[in-house]
Length: 203
Image (tube, rainbow, N blue to C red):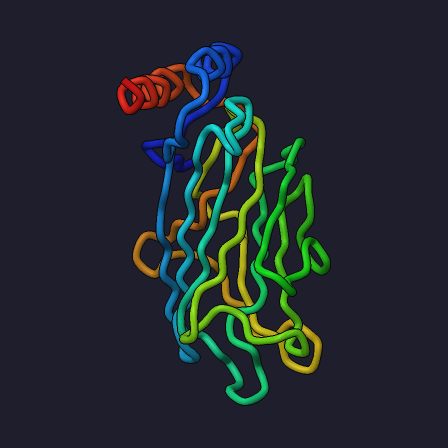
């Protein structure tokens, strides 16, 4: 099972080290961009994971920026207006979920602890697209493991109040999906690499 090389996995040691570091600016632990091309336009999703969410060393921020040109039924659909992210298993302690004004949280397909969902029905406005991007985030416990192995996450538009034109979020070239949390622990070697990177960035 593929895992990204920069995956940072938590242990009690990792949490103690981060807590001992004290207040500090957030450090990006992992990031990626996937691009999906369809006959109706492109979908791009930037994923990143940061430590020290809201100044709390025991929380990590998982953030996404959705953009592209996808609009499957111009004049009827509202751009990229649904983002459904599925985790690699049950991930507890998902909190502080955020989205732009008007977007609904966990209304339709995905919801914690299985994933998170963000939706903007077409009667509420135009989603991400040529006119701009949309940003989303949530927090998890520090030390949560992550992967970019595809978990079936998808985006779509809305037409007539219903999701329309589903796009599987797997990169055209690599087949990777967006970065999402996974419940299982990884190797101690990856933990050591991740903690070393944090220490170097803060020294």
